[in-house]
Length: 310
Image 1: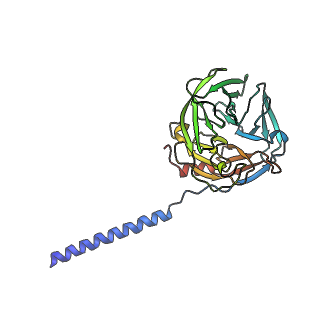
Image 2: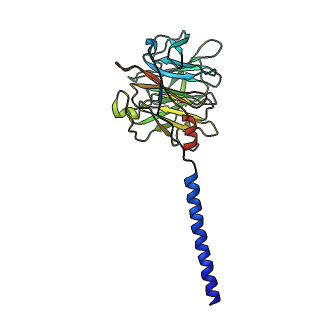
């Protein structure tokens, strides 16, 4: 009998220990802070300057200046914006005639890169990247796709300074391309298809083409520290954590954080401020003026929510 009583006591103690452990684990899980979703976008200002009626690209300079560009035009023209009023406070131009400029990115060395990659009719033999360095003459790099023409509106540049072009596909799966070797001037340099990018279903409303707008890539951006990369559609931004290797293509194979950007007339521009705030810009469409909106803490939310890499 004493032996049986000891056995029952031991079993009871073990069960009690498991129960206490489960309660402790549940308490820790409930007490742990959840990854906070980024807040809804807040409007900063309305774009009224007619030169930016077709706002297509945004980039933030090292000094914090917000620069914008329109698609189309017969020369490269960048406009610095007052962040409170959207008034144009500065201009940079280059004597290069783009075919269809669609996005703007900032390289680690401070140079602005214009993605002359638009091709709605998919007829171009080459596309181009136009570079405006902080000092010196502008550069032209022509590119060729390995699998025929594509329309593309997103340009990404990682810590290694290598450009990544993401195509605009209504099929829902965008192609991710990067140069097969060093960029020639003027080229062309062949591109290689390095990966693809797709998005989960979204119920966010906005844009000019209905539900298809939730899958078509219209812009891209990298955070100031190159730790987060973002692609946008007409309805949402999708933020990815960049792995320690800095490989943007690998980052785009990961699980993104969704940042809804509802009710933009034709949202095509995206950039990050140094503090991790995500900036979103839209073209004017009809009577709906384009606006500059901000999502504070977006980069931090992406780092907290998403693992690095696939």
